[in-house]
Length: 582
Image (cartoon, rainbow, N blue to C red; front, top):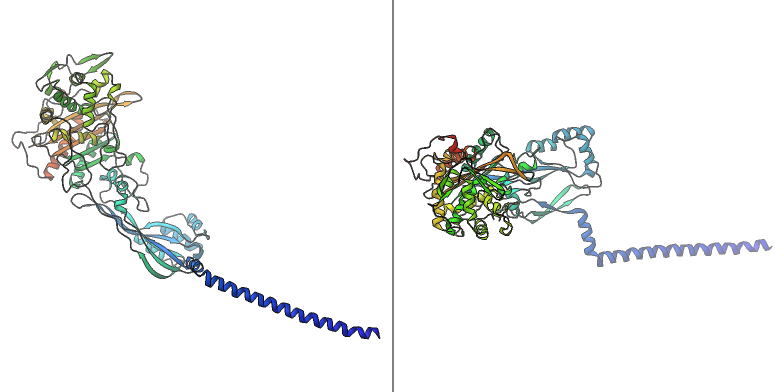
């Protein structure tokens, strides 16, 4: 009887538990629903902007639009550097689906190893991988025709230099992103580069562009740069310099052509050069602009500055006579030499014969401070403000530390270091009645009125007349003559410093001059480094380059002759007429 009574009680308990389970489950479902509603209200109502940004970040992309780099031209508008549109191939590795055979074909089209290409395509965690930058049009078309999904083309620009090696060290070059790395491309990067643009697009989860939404900012092209360079004269200068470097088996060479009146650089060339359109295998030293960044001891081309300084100081007159003796002069425990025993020489003859002894004796009569100031005013020891990276300032030591022998040797260009551009700039003082003009690589639509009066007009004109004797048959550079024009200039032949002393067999041969000497329009400075063909004198190695370049440049500029009948270009008279003291 007791067992029968227990069954209803157990049944009631089970029913009671079932009702509670239903209520708990219902409560949990309701709570979960309320949480979802609350979360939805919280996110949609309070954090709507945050979610929108997150969503946009998944599908919206801002694509950069490259700006067209400004063109570089010569003074006549001839293009020297142009940015041409190119296509770059890129991939979204996560969406690329290619068979091994397709990868091999693509690698062959791009000219890259198949293994390296496959490695890039395996980077599935990245959405953007360049496969090849700046493809020629035929390669770009061939790559896309393979039909591999996940590959895309991107418009970029590549710099092209029509004049190639003729202007390589002057212009420099840009990298694959069209950013200037050397030369004027680097100096005027901000001017040329422009401002990139951007546009908003929508991409799917595989990185494919499904909609071009809007243009945010149009790219602003860079500004063009007009140089002072005249490419007719530049080609001429490069060709003549190349002929001289090859003929004399020289290490390198440089040439500068200046407009004496405006200071504009009409030509600036260096050898050896390189092709900036294909820099594979090019050495760093080939990229240097020797005329602007390299220093050398100028040798006898410094003598006109010594003479002009002494004329202004009143320690000499043009008709002063100096005893140069038997070609050897002992100063302390050092001996200064001339190539020949010249005896008594006038100041003009010291320039004409290039006497080291005569120049040394003139310099020793000057106060060191005065001599230093005159050289400093002429631009030595300061870099030309020409807007070129790494322009050399040269070396002009403080006068307080000069010993007599150092003051004497600086008079003929030893113990002082310059760049070829500094020397060309310095010679503007003799072309402009003692005033040194600033030099420029940019075309000057309005000639600069600025300048520094270094020497008196009388001293500058007197030295210019003396330099005319240098190109006479009796001077050191008859090969610098130019038919129909009076020429004034100076040779330089200097031993190269090496390991703390002067090398016995390595020389710098140079010539700097101007024409027409009656009213100079052009200055041409030529430097040949380490000629090794049996001759090394500036009058033999560098002077012919000057003559050919000056002759052609005067014709290009249509400069009228100042001596059409009286100047007959003669071959060198005797060997001694071409030799000079060093």
